[in-house]
Length: 310
Image 1 (cartoon, rainbow, N blue to C red):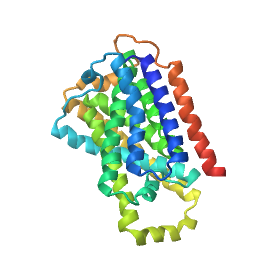
Image 2 (image 1 turned 180 degrees about the vertical axis):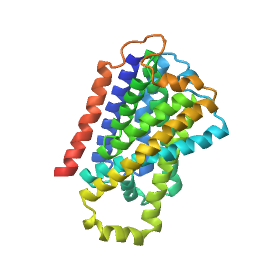
Image 3 (image 1 turned 120 degrees about the horizontal axis):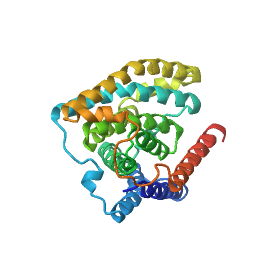
């Protein structure tokens, strides 16, 4: 799929996501988290599939669908752990602004839903769809320009914006960059899907334990909430940001090791080249892509304004 179709796919994806979100909020506010998650993923999947089939693209090549070695899988887990301090730092910084943790807010939706159903939709189906869309189709389409770094950053930006809240945007942007580089190093979307599933499953498990199994601990947190200030969040963020300098360096080193283990020794060096020889499929940034990003950013900022001032 070329870059023009990437732009149109993201624009329609954003419109569908906003429309469904507003419809559910106003008319079906009590919809369970499982169905809500399913509708959200369909908003991402349907437009992308439409444009993918229109372009008659080889899905296997577009999505980097291939297996990876068991040893590589273990390295991927180490890589994921190394990137996690960045997630904690970004989460803390945005909580200093909003006071909300979007991932943990999911605890309020556990009522009436089993852990398995929530884990299935958020921990399995969600990562499968999102990796297919963002690291597969969209990043693959942007990569037809012959670039690596710029498409990786842009696809990460698209990934962060589609969440439409500043808290998730901050760390999904960072993870999107790491995961885009991981695909290049491993040559397989399996690697990023494993990372995404691990991250979401861990968040769901922690949220579930706080809601169902650690009620006393939650009460302690609530009792001390007045003492958790924006300064505390900033200090925590700075601490983990400092740690992330070293862990991110280790993560980059793991990318090199993963590429060697998968027999892709040249790809790591290619990551830092400005452009690779490739068939050109238009400009990297298109008007439909800018429009989709503007809509997503606009709603994200609107939700932030409502959260802070209304």
